[in-house]
Structures are given as C-alpha cells and as structure tokens.
Image 1: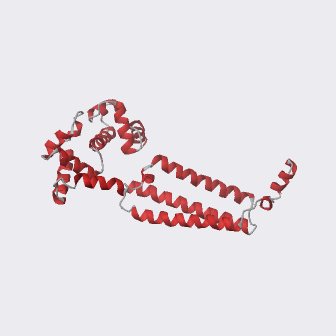
Image 2: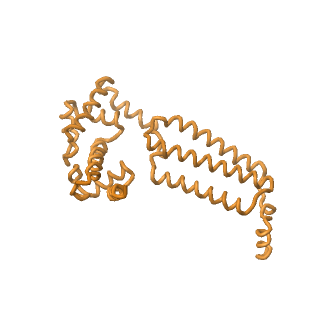
Image 3: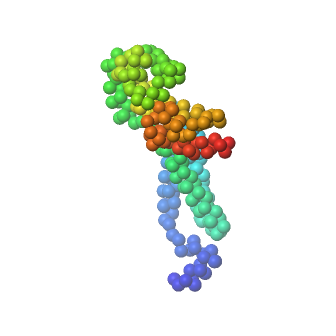
Amino acid sequence: MNTANKLKVVLNNEIGDYIYMPSYGIWIILGLMFFYGFLIYNRFKDHRKIGYKEKIWLQWLIASYLIFVLLFIIFFVLVKFDLMDRKYDYFIDGAITFFIGMVAYFGFVQPEVFKGQKPLSKLIPLYRKYSKSGLSEALSIDLKNRLIKIMKDEKPYLKSDLRMNELANLLKVSRNHTSQIINEHFNLSFFDFINRYRVEEAKVLLSDPDEVLNITAIAYQVGFNNRASFYKAFKKFTNQNPTTFLKHLQVS
C-alpha cells in the first residue's frame, strides 16, 4: 500500500479493516487480566500487616492495574462494535501509557512494594539458628523492650565504633542473644539496626531550624564514620538522600 492509500485509511477511520486478531485472542488476554487481578487481590490480603506507607503505595498500584484493565475492556468494546474514533483511541492509548508509567514510578520510589514478604526458605534457617538458644518467647519480648529503651534513653548508636559486644553488655545478655533479638524482632542486621537509629537522629537534627551543623557534621554527630555511608543509610531507610530531605523541609 502506497503512502496516499495509507493516509486515506487513517483519515477515513478504516484502520480496523486492516487489523485482525482471532476472537479467542482477546478472551485469552481478558482471562489473564482477571486471573492476575485475582492473584493481586489475594496477595493484598496477605500484606495487611505491612507498614502504612507501603500499604498506600500498594493500594495505588492495585488501582492503577484495575484502571488499566478497565481501559482495555473499553477499547475492546469500542473496536468490537465499530465505535472507535481517533480521539477515543488517542485518549485510551495515552491513559494506558500513563498507568504503565505509574507502575514504573512506584517501582522506583517504593521498591519495597515489589520485594514481597521474606520467603519461608529464608525464615527456616533463622529459626534453626536460634532454636537451641534457650531464649523463651516471654524473655525474648522482654529483651526486645529493654533494647528499645536502651536505644532511646542511652543512645549507644551515637558511638561511631559501637560493636555488638558493647550493646550486649548494655542489655546484660550474651552477644548471641543480642543478635537473636535484633534479627527476630526487627528483621535487621546489627549494623542496619544501629544505622536506622542514626538516621532517625539525623532527621531530628535536620528538622531543627536552630541547628547550625551542616549535613556532613550531622553525619558524624549521629555516629557515622563518613559522609558516603551516611548518605547510603539515609537513602535506604527514607528513600531519599539527606539533601533532598532538607530541601523538602525548607519548602514546607
């Protein structure tokens, strides 16, 4: 078909005459969409105990998928009954592209939504590791609460060279039991556990309008040994770097 005839087809809205898809193909696609929608619904029920922020992002993600499916159904109906118009086509294509972009955006700013829950294969070794530690459930919970109180009142994380043994001494238990408490109750390694408190302390200092220290000085103040490790930890726990966090505070 030459260029003139192609242009005529477009202008006369005759594109549908040249596009063919087996009727069963559409139904397969729709069936898969509803199947994945069912899986998403079940997965969402399993994530009712996730954090508030992650739950909001997950709800937006599910809403985007449902709107995507609805737009596809509308597109199918318009084509099926020969009601398709160029303006409808442009609108639906643009909307679908937008929601695909939204999913990509969610994946970038909130990757935790896509990581899912820790698989059982990773939880079983953790259980086996501490199964003979002799730490009862009641004592474990008590130690967790004591650890939280120590971190809040004594702020040992401000010590830049803090080690597990020192934290265990404050908690008055063995190094192994301290590691167990952190792993089981906070699902973090020792260094991530400490760095999370350091990041929270840094957020307090950054939010203080009377604070005269710059970002690098604050990094050292809260226990980090260098600016790079501070930025890495801050980004890990807040999904933004300290500079961006500070700019948002100044704008608000």
